[in-house]
Image 1 (tube, rainbow, N blue to C red):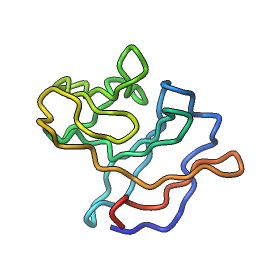
Image 2 (image 1 turned 180 degrees about the vertical axis):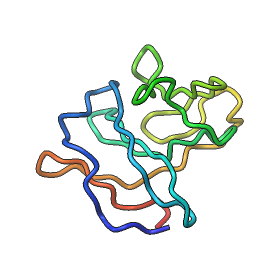
Image 3 (image 1 turned 45 degrees about the horizontal axis):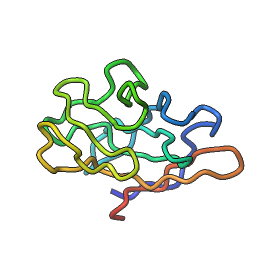
Image 4 (image 1 turned 90 degrees about the horizontal axis):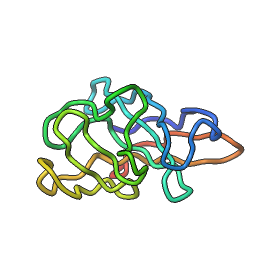
Length: 118
């Protein structure tokens, strides 16, 4: 599942609790949607796949946060995920977390480094 480091976006594209940026990764040999958001002042990346049912989370492209800009919400079934860790906070995800990605911010850019378990 390892990917080489690659540019996702300019860091300025991410605002605290605001819209995220979608991109694609390779997951178990297949293309898969992913996203990065800013929460707690840090860029956070996850596979764009609800742990309840493998559907994309955003209800409109780049809209991952609930109205309060705190939790990530699955638009299809309402599963709620902690923005900082991807842990299930409630709803049909039944304790199953989002798949976390390793991302970093440097020189005004956000880079994808791979999966958290690589």
